[in-house]
Image (cartoon, rainbow, N blue to C red; front, top):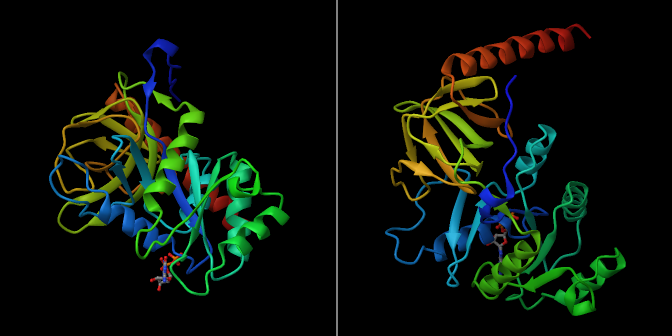
Length: 297
Ligand code: GDP
């Protein structure tokens, strides 16, 4: 295989947090992600977010950035974790205030805890007459999860994903949590990161959304992603804009891979195209052998 050198501390620069939204079905994950996507049009940048590429970045009024994995539910999170990928820095767990702490809420909490990812609770649907945010916080307290209102340290905010009430404050709390993590990356190196989603487009060929976690990705770079590889021919962001290069904590759709890698696959840019191809083909061979072996058992 190949070596990825460690970054020297002086090469590191602050990067945006990467956030996943989790929670029980119907508690408002999609609504929250949609609200943020629609409302947080980057100041001074043309156009809103038009492409659903599996992840997007927003800039808050404070000028700070957050990158969201736009795949609600923890399927993506779990699939990625199963492949050893840990891309999320912070988890927003949405809980509907007119409901209870449900099985999938608990599951989301334990996934985040197992991954060592800090949680920010979004107590949602507070616009509803039947909403009872205190009951939810009490429920959390009984699980040993003390939110700030209850004298604890866990961030939580009452929101309505429908009206937008409290959403900006929620995001500010996410940024506070991010500050504690001192997230950093080195923009001045070959890129690496994780595949968010990939598919075959009739007109364009294989389109892969990847999250650049470290380094800078440029057109012409040779990418190895899981069992696939290829030269980056074009890159498009979530605003449908063609870009030539992207830095850390940026989601981007790329064209040029010779297949569709799986969500959670790691990607790396390699100097040596032949080496990348040979690693990709060795990995496919290994995968074939493994699938034969599991079929036999
Ligand atoms: P998901 O399954 O967690 O992604 O939940 P959705 O975002 O699809 O929301 C489930 C339902 O709750 C939808 O009918 C939403 O319109 C509704 N909903 C979500 N957030 C709110 C909210 O803040 N207030 C109200 N009144 N309804 C909401």
